[in-house]
Every structure is written in C-alpha cells, then in structure tokens.
Image (tube, rainbow, N blue to C red; front, side, top):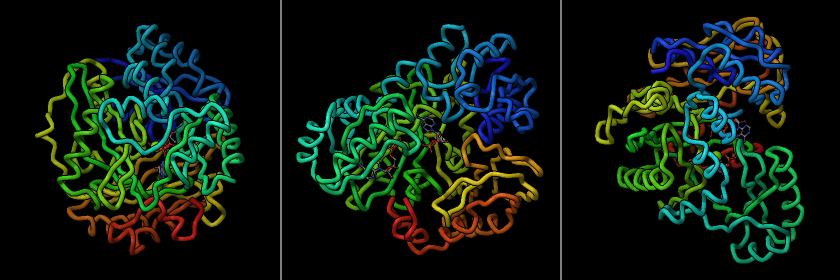
Length: 447
Ligand code: ADP
Ligand code: ADP
Ligand code: MG
C-alpha cells in the first residue's frame, strides 16, 4: 500500500480524497494555487505545496509543477480527482515515467475513451448499443451528407468533449453550418481539438450511468446505476441511485453491456459508462468517464462501498474483495449539487465571501464541501460549492429527507441554487420518476 499520496485537485473532491487517505493511514500532500492559500484542502492535508498562480493552466494543470511536488515530498502516487488532469493521458503517462502511481486507469485507456469518436467505434465492436451517429466529420460537406443520413434533429459533439461543452443541437439542415462552426470553435478553444462528430438527438430520454470498478487481476464489478437526467446546459444538477426507471431485468442488461465495455478495453480502477435510455427501454452508449465521478457518493450510500478507498487499493495492486454477487443496493440516495450561481439569471456564476454557513446534519445526511464560514470563494474555478447527499429506505423518504436537509442549509454571501433544488424535489415529474433530460426545459429554464 502507498504510504503517501499527492492529491492533484482542489475543492470538495480534494477534501473527500484526503479523508479517505486519513482513514487508511496514508499521509497526504495537497497542491494549491496562489488563490487557494486559505482553502480547506490545504489545511487538512499533512503537507501542502504551492504550484503556481491562480489560473488553472499555471497551477492545477501544470504537470511539471505537480510532478515535481510529488517527487520532492516523497509521494508514491497521485489521485487526480475529477476534471482538471483526471482524464489527461499524458499526465497518467508522465506519472508512470516518474515512477509514481496514477490512481485511475492506464494512459492508453484514458486516451482511447477520451476520444469519444474512437470510444463509439470500440463499443460498436464490443457489441454495446451506441446512439445512431457517425465517425468524425472532417468538413461541412461531410457533415451535410451524414446529417441527411442520420436525420434531424441531431447533435454535433466534440470528440474531446466533457463537462457539457462542445455540444450543439441542430434542428434542421439550415442550422447545420452555424452550429458546426460554433461547436468546432468551442471545442478548439476548450480542448485544443476542434474535431466533431454527429449523433441523432434522442428526445424523451433519461441519462442513466453505471458505476464500475476493475482491478489489476481482471475482475470487473458493477456498483449499480445512477440517474442524472436533471441537467442544465448538459451538466448534471441532481443525481440518484437507483433510478426509478430501471427494472431488475434492464439493470442486468445494463450491467452486461458495462462489463463488455470495460473488458473490451482492459479497464482498471473506477469508471462510469453513460447511456441514454428511451421510453421503450432501449439504451445507447454515450461515453465512458475514466475517472471518479462528481456524483459517486450516491453509489457509496446505497452500496456501502467507499469508492475512493477502493480506487487507492486497486491502484496499489490489491484485488477487489467483493464480487458482483456480493453487491447489494439498499434504499435510495439522492444528491443535489450546490452551486454558487443564479438560476434566475441563466445560472450566472456568483462569487464572494461566505458570511454565514450552517451545514445540515442528522442521520444519513452527508454534505461534501470545502466551504467554511468566512471563506472567500475565488472567482477562478468551478461554481460547485458542495454536494448534499441523503440516504433513506425508500425514494419517497429520501425526497423528504433532502427537502429537510435543504431547508437547514444556510449559505449567506453568495447566490446559490437551493430554492431551485427544493422546487425540483416538489416537481410532480421528479416525484413520480418520469422525468427525462428535458426536465429543466419543460420547467422553462435554460438547459
Ligand atoms: P460528471 O460526469 O462527474 O458529472 P462533469 O461532466 O459534470 O462530470 O464534469 C466533472 C467536472 O470536471 C466538472 O467540474 C467539469 O467542469 C469538469 N470537466 C469535465 N470535463 C472536463 C474537461 N474536458 N476539461 C476540463 N474540465 C472538465
Ligand atoms: P459530456 O462529455 O459533455 O458529459 P455527453 O456525451 O455525456 O457529454 O452528453 C452530455 C449530456 O447531453 C447528456 O447527459 C445528455 O443529457 C445530452 N445528450 C448527449 N447526447 C445526446 C443525444 N444523442 N441525444 C439527446 N441528448 C444527448
Ligand atoms: Mg457525460
């Protein structure tokens, strides 16, 4: 087992990983930008190293500074969290070259699945159903031809995409040119890769994903599904496990496809396969996320399995101690992302000083956050301030518990989305479980 781990991230996920290390008796090294000197992850870690100025390009994405910090502090492995360098194959490769463990899958698997166009082709080969679509479109002329074949509406998606960026909806052929140029330009500036492909736009669908974990011995175990259909700007807002729309039969099929997907690429460590599910019970592969997911706590609550600890164990070469038959999904868990943003103003990010903070408590209530009273939220990073997660015996009880917890949560000094989260919990389509990815649009909100 590793005796010291460096956490190449910030915010609530860095805190989450430090906690797992503490429980495992592993020393921790935090890295931080000049804007994050007062951040919680810095004070919770055993050691902390400043890696550069505020912009992520000069700090949290600065591979040389991070690797140097790891070597100088004697860390044996790096946990990348989510976002930032977590899906960067070059970083995973450099860790290996420096003799450091990378807590995630191999650089080769990250590169293959990070190219969403290549991932689609690999899944077709593995016998996993994919959304009808096409390979990379090199120019507008090809896009027109492929667009006719796929039919409208369709989505233009960036092959290097993530976090909902580089996606454009095209409702009719006359919109294709503008959307093609916009998606390519956005992808080029966000990911340094303007490559795009087309997918049929499926309506009346749910976003369902399966959490899996694999070890070096070749075992793959699926840890239930999560439903993440409540989204704004193609980004998740509320997640739950299990999904109210997944029957035991459908779950078995989803697990089978996920196993195939993982085995086809020789997957090691924790990963997620995302699908779209239609009203007829057909599901289609969308992408594989080769990292820990933001919404992993709902899976932890219903399975009782600590995903971060298992990520560390399998990265250190330990085999999984449980098989597929051992995994039991009990009760229902819901997560609301608590974002510093204004839902009434197109979700514009807000920042400022947290002048008053009261965190909810009570049984089976978990608030993963890096906030503390008087903390000044820096304007340079993600707007997510925390994740409120509850667990109960039934879905109805979990919804009631979430409402109670939301009503207790006090964050003053910044705009945040608590009122909206409460409204979602009361929405009839959320309550009866029939909601799809068009949920927010139906509520008249940007999505
Ligand atoms: P999840 O699938 O875990 O819900 P998201 O897609 O919401 O993940 O992204 C997780 C985090 O990582 C978010 O903070 C998002 O902004 C960030 N992120 C996702 N993809 C990228 C990327 N390619 N580059 C930079 N940040 C990303
Ligand atoms: P990202 O890498 O940015 O997370 P995804 O491919 O996972 O991109 O898509 C993000 C979201 O966009 C999905 O959760 C879903 O709501 C919507 N979406 C993606 N592909 C389709 C599609 N073909 N039809 C309808 N909605 C889609
Ligand atoms: Mg996705």
